[in-house]
Length: 209
Image (tube, rainbow, N blue to C red):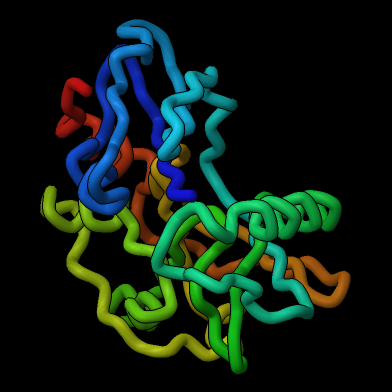
């Protein structure tokens, strides 16, 4: 089953075209989403579940689990959501917002968001073959608000010494402020950009559904 979801504010959303393209043929009508208020519809092959948007966060703490990425279809949003939901629940039990997905000693992305790591020169993302295409990262880059991330493997050893952002279609861009690993919480290096201002700028490009 394919799944999509994104924040809707007063009938507008950031780049709904990117969501339709990632989902593929058979994208259902969004006519049921109200034109006022904040919503977080869940879109599947079966239709649209209109849900109120949850509270948005301004920062993110990520938990690094001991297990490796359990996904069987990392490039498709939907088939692996139950196990990703379980990982996120475990992350919350550890005092974090989301879980890091990792494989072979390298960071991939969060269970519910893309991961961007700053290496002192460029923003870095894990290779495309191992990550879900991020509509939020694409939207930010195409709006000229951030340069396109360079794709390469991200060793776990880089994480605790590198500024990092996560990007989701609900929360937008949020700086990673701490890592939780082996029962220890480690502050993350500060991100030297104003993520809230970037999110506000990105919403200037929001479109009617």
